[in-house]
Image (cartoon, rainbow, N blue to C red):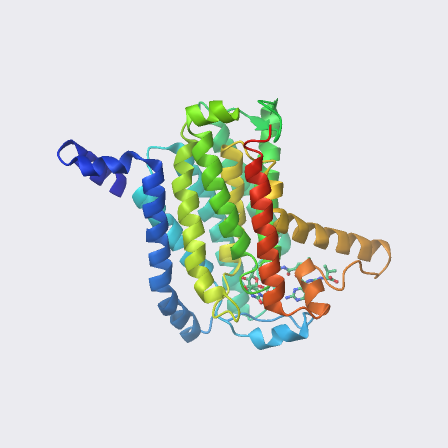
Amino acid sequence: MLYYALYSLHTTHTIFNVFRYTTFRSLVAALMALSISFLLGPSLIRRLTENQIGQPIRTDGPERHKVKAGTPTMGGTLILFSLVLATLLLADLGNPYIWLVLLVTLGFGAIGFVDDYRKFRYGTSAGLAPRHKFLAQCAVATLGAVLLLLVPEFQPTIAVPFFKNVKADLGLFYLPFAAFVIVGASNAVNLTDGLDGLAIGPVMIAAGTYAVFAFVTGNVKLAEYLQIPFVGGAGELAVFCSALAAAGLGFLWFNAYPAQMFMGDVGSLPLGAALAMVALITKHELVLVVVGAIFVVEALSVIAQVAYFRWTGGKRIFRMAPIHHHYELLGWPEPLIIVRFWIVSVICALVALSTLKLR
Ligand code: 57M
């Protein structure tokens, strides 16, 4: 909204012409989202504490987590509020991709909110029944995929990293593919969110990486020069991604070890879904596996552990899954695990960005 109000003044005051640039609006959106999450964080922590919306700790977890019992959770509401407000104010609301990514983000946020609320309401770490949660995720993801295919100029193709202009047209199979990517990314981030700052760090890094992907994909000259698919209007997602990275940075101030607040499912579920939506729209969906390698490894560690556990009748590959718990049980201090996972995430983002040139 601010975009329209201020850009329209450029006819009388040329300074406002700067609002036409996605880069400028991405920077302002980031500063706005960071300011909002910084300023509202302390009062949210107070409010969550007053209402005793604290994290129940599972009894079968690592011993050291017991001290975390009661830590205020649902801090994801702070991330979503900062992200959505900054996006609505600074993004071009005539762009269908902005509404699409907001719809899927808020849809998954609602699922996470209900899950967190039920945990708080009934005082267990159970929340929504896994089946109901999964079905709700599939419903929102499928809706997002259908609406994406209804955008006139959007093609149901996927791009292959490192190969020039190699596109696979999935046709209607794009629907289950897109739904799988969204639900998979959402749950992978959810599983990763098990140590202070462990999920939000890679989410911020991935959001910053996709701000670059969105900008170049939406710029016809840069897309042609880099020989990547051009997606008209995708550049506007750089505003959303910048706001996401900055909202995450503000939240990290309170989630850094020792955490004053957890994000809850209301944070972890939409963050993964949002990154997946941006990856699909910008035709950088396969490279999401590289950018989000930490999330992929965390999810695969659970799949492998559960499969092996069942197949061998109780043996484990890891001391505990997801893999961050394995390192905890190896005796690694929590901050060491977190920072090293962040470092790996930065390296993966750099490799992913290199695919823009290596083709
Ligand atoms: C999401 N949630 C954290 C917090 C956060 C199938 C199985 C692998 C599922 C998995 C599971 O339950 N995952 C749920 C992970 C939880 O964090 C809350 O959940 C939100 C995110 N959804 O925002 O509100 C705990 O994580 C810790 N935490 C922090 N700092 C943070 O900033 O310390 C979270 C955020 C919090 C806090 O302790 O309570 C979680 O871990 O539940 N299950 C597991 O991950 C369990 N693993 C397991 O069962 N492994 C078995 C299976 C695979 C056979 C095995 O390896 O043998 C572990 N998780 C826990 N206890 N907490 C082990 C048991």
